[in-house]
Image (cartoon, rainbow, N blue to C red; front, top):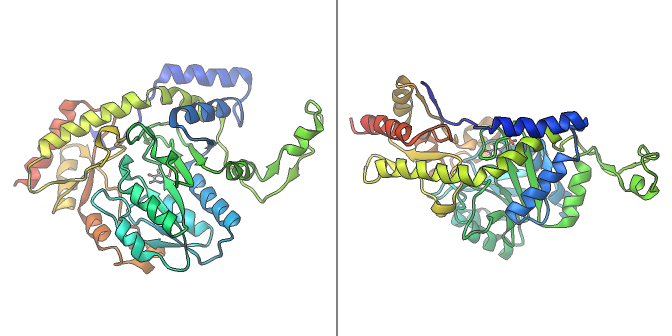
Length: 378
Ligand SMILES: *Cc1c(COP(=O)(O)O)cnc(C)c1O
């Protein structure tokens, strides 16, 4: 049977039970399960605020938009970001007519603090940090740099559901202004499409809740104190969007959250299995995680000389790996910074994402690793 690189595993019957509740109640939209899921997520992570969204992409955009608006950033101001990420991360910066300024990645494929320091100039307003594959990288150093230079810090935690460091969720660390999670189907906490935005500042959370529902301010209605009669009598404070999540997605999220730690622990076992097979092989560089025992390991990568050859070899064996990610400065719209991040550029040609998901057994992992070793040793 074909082995895919990423694949969601749902607890189907339980999900259907939660969804049934929504359908029977006739409440599938904002409120009800979305509120319940926000509360559970806050409890699980320790975030003070959490707002459920229809994707992490819109969350990253809202994070940039709100920080820009509230801190008086101008068009053309810069956010330092990583070239090794899904394009959502960097599109979010462009949506607000700010400039993604690319800094290089370190051995964890997260932003390298030394290069971040070099890329700071008088237009720099923030740093966008991606917890690559659930790895925290050198986030603590990045926080320090942001504090010293009065920069905001956005954490793209799309891969980080369940990641901890000494039992603490990194997004809740002092100095992280906003953390955005993804619950897209192949992420560690799978729904179909949804996400969560967690601001440290309660005022920003309030603004965000208005922005995700067309900019509508429900206070007018709340003030009327009349049970629904004046529901239409709201004010519209912002040119907002339709970005909030719905109760069907939240229903799935509520179920899958219960299995997140168990799933991540299993991912770590599979990662250990890969590592044991590859360790000591000079042709293979394993991309490590500093928080190895508490990492969500959304993806597992190795670095090899002939990446494209290995991709082909695995495909011939019915194994379908991936590449996370191509150096974003290779894309036309980000090409202005091409060549400024040599490590990212090199890695972009050499990394391969091997299958890692909850349907795989240790035997599968050994089989995949055997095929990898067979190719690199030949
Ligand atoms: C998946 C992903 C996103 C976007 O998440 P969606 O919920 O699909 O919008 C953003 N950043 C990274 C690093 C991702 O992997």
